[in-house]
Image (cartoon, rainbow, N blue to C red; front, top):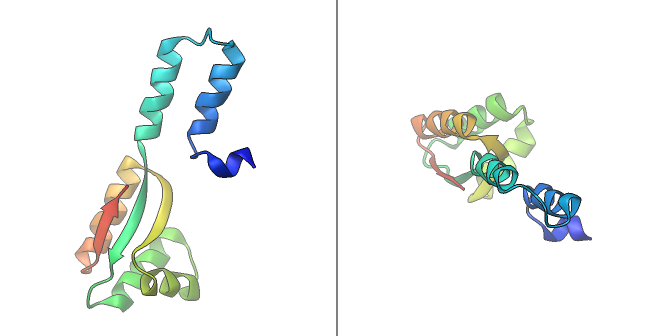
Length: 106
């Protein structure tokens, strides 16, 4: 139940806080927060006019099947990649924008 209420990176901060019982080194917490800011979600805001090309890029990048990729494109805005590194997200965003999609990093 607790896991559903917390964001992905919050569990690590919670564990660090409880493990040290208030004695957690501030450098450890800062490192954890910096690591969280390097992880982003890629949201397909709008597919544009070339839906087929957008579906193809999503399939190639994520490994999803045709049905799943098409559902993401049809349901836009939708998250097409979760917990991606900043570099990976930028590459995916560039590939999607190249085929006419509108993408947001969150």
